[in-house]
Length: 150
Image (cartoon, rainbow, N blue to C red; front, side, top):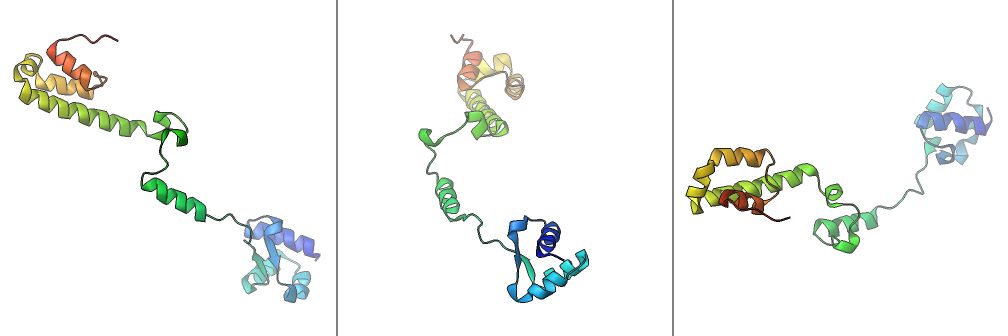
């Protein structure tokens, strides 16, 4: 069989492009005598035909950059792409907000027990869970009975 046909078969077997198939020059007679797919598979097992990976992209610089980013570098405004929501997941934002509100509610319970008692701690807790408050300021204003101008 012609070397081009063998290359095509080998590429299909190795699941790569034809340009990535490497023939051992010393085994050229064996390669040209291959007639079936099984013969080509045998040559691959022997090592006469291989998939070459000479030109793959180096990850060295990427690793260095990742290490810097994991230490908290390269995170300033100029390096940012995408909105806040795109950069950090909705769930993480939600967890942060709810935890902050619950902390604030516990603090209010000790500092202003009468104001919290008036509405009910459990009711306020449920309101926090139900996404009623935008943030801590809104919770405090609600408990104290103030209106926030927007």
